Image 1: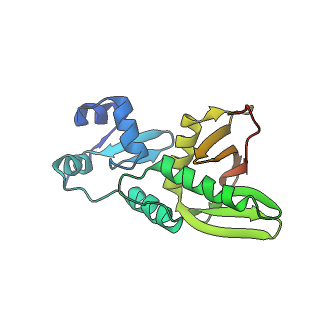
Image 2: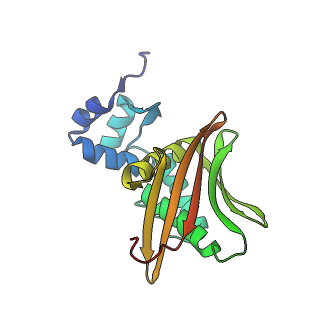
Image 3: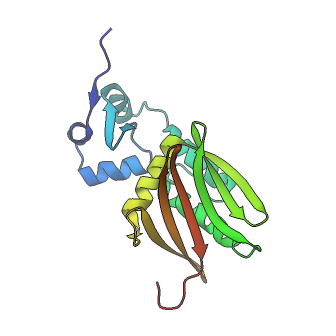
Length: 193
C-alpha cells in the first residue's frame, strides 16, 4: 500500500483546473476536501479525485455550519457558508443587545473545540460548540473580508437586515490556550456606515 499523496494549494488549483480565487471560495464554503496546516492548505489527491468524480461525502464543516444555522433559526442548506454563519451569530447578538448588561459574543477554546458564548451582566449563555477547524476557517474569513480596525487582529463589521443595522468590533486575542475572539455588537451612529 502506497502512502497518501498530498497536494499544496497551487497543485490543487492545477488538478481542479480552476483559479486560485475560485478554489479559495470553495474552501471557505467547505465545498472541497482539504486540511489546513498552519497557514497552508493540503489536499489529498484521492479525496480530490473522489470529489471531482462526484463520490465525495459532504464536507463535515458544511454539515456543521448547516446544523448551527438551523439552531439559530436560519436556513442551513448545503450552500450556506462561513459568511452566513458569521452573520447569523452576530444578528443573534444584536437581538440580545437589548438585554440589560449585554456585553457581546465570545468564541473561546473549550477542550478540542471552541465555545460560542453570549456574555451579559446576568452571566454567560453558552450557545454552541464549534470545531477548531470551523473556528479557524471562520476567523480567517472574517479577517480577510471585513475592514481592518486600529489593531492588527481587529475588524469592523457592518451588517444590514431590513430596517436594522449593526456594527460589530471583532477582536482576536492570542492566548496560551488558543485564540479568543470577542465581538462588541452595537447599532452604528449615523454616518458611520
